[in-house]
Amino acid sequence: MEKKKVTIPQVCHGHSRPVVDLFYSPITPDGFFLISASKDSHPMLRNGETGDWIGTFEGHKGAVWSSCLDNNALRAASASADFSAKLWDALTGDVLHSFEHKHIVRACAFSEDTKLLLTGGFEKILRVFDMNRLDAPPTEVDKSPGSIRTLTWLHSDQTILSSCTDIGGVRLWDVRSGKIVQTLETKSPVTSAEVSQDGRYITTADGSTVKFWDANHFGLVKSYDMPCNIESASLEPKSGEKFVAGGEDMWVRVFDFYTGEEIGCNKGHHGPVHCVRFTPTGLSYASGSEDGTIRIWQTTPANPEENETSSRRVKHSVDEVSKKIEGFHINKEGKTAEKPSDT
Image (cartoon, rainbow, N blue to C red):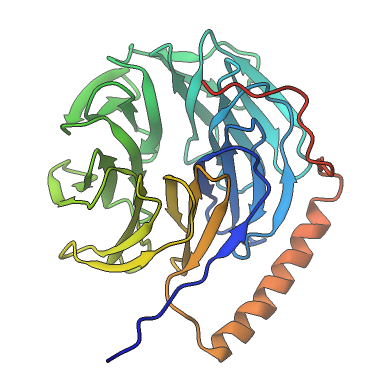
């Protein structure tokens, strides 16, 4: 009988509360990076390939629900329960600007050209901030039918995707008119929405279902029932032949995109899995959990030659990053200034 291979993840500690959002930057000349959002109010930046901690963004006074990097990984943004979204210098950790809101901010997303920042939350308003005029009032898109849970850009920043915490469906907004032009119908609220790297698919998780939609014609391509309620799903970006999903049963499962068959099950988290994301290379994927850890799983066990090549590449990348982040604010003692809010 063939022995089943066991995947041993890289475990990334550092957060003191649940990890609720993960975001990988595209590949840059210095490699790619991972930013995590947590209820401990401190987003963290890591080397995307190794998971090595680079620094902590300090300044929020409440849970951080969402965080992202621009395409060059030079700036970061975060959305928080402290009624603000913040823009950060990703090289130094400095706050560049704080965008005040009137209620909890749940989601944020940079446009593809990095010129705009989109935010949304309990106010049910989508706001678009100009990154070249930080003090200018934002453009407000027509009111959302529910409290905003997720946001992402599509079609070279011409379309916005949003989902709500309290009602099903993914809404597509035309940026020019500010109106909803289409709704992708789901039975349960969508807790995760991802546009594939090649722009072909929208991957959504709602209840115990993972769906794949045509990102251009918006038809439903695949729909698979999962073994439990799923909070997040991510499609492998290179071949598109598999996807990962995580949820309330604490396991990170791997499925065949074409058949929906489960082809892997990774155990290790000690709490529900809130977020999963593939790296831009497709060689690994990360999961964030209620247990406060991030785990990075290899897509396939590498052979010794690949490991050696990867080690040299990683060392070079880490050395370059170390030079660039000199002066980054590091919370050496792991202290928090104020007990973060859970809401």
